[in-house]
Image (tube, rainbow, N blue to C red; front, side, top):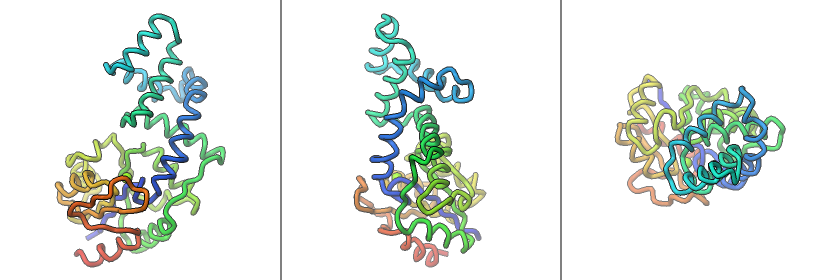
Length: 248
Ligand SMILES: [Mg+2]
């Protein structure tokens, strides 16, 4: 029976510092110029329109404050939208529209050569090894699928995108909801028992295990969640191998 590895990215295959200190500041820095440049460009418009709708629906104080500023013509609508998106970034809101936009901005940076993904030192070797062993590799990350593919395509160890067969993001569902993992198992055409989910987040591991998946908790320097609860712990992706071979 095919074994599946379902891998989180941040804190699992890639240091959190790459995301927090390189990727997010880059997106935040370029957001204003990017939205201003593309707001009327039909090719990029979908995510921007989606962000507008999200702002429209959002009844939070900050959202209402910005809408009032626009209606009183203190700022124009595009400036309001940019400030709203910056606000979502500052509160770390898991907004799908924002994630999609960030993915577009990162693509722009990767293509210009301003961004390259620094994975953990053993990540590329492990991915290649698992792929050669016939283990099916998939990604489940809160970053958009597009952002996930860009990260692996433009890694410091070369293009690793082709090693993965499936990609999942929050369009599938929240990472802390068991239902998302049931959907993923279905998409992989696999029993959850043949899937190993690796993540640095205990609640995500809980949700995956609820569906019957095997779980490994990634504990690395710099990871905020340091409590594996009762999940098995790995400190390096090399340690995944032992679990794959012992569990039949
Ligand atoms: Mg993570």
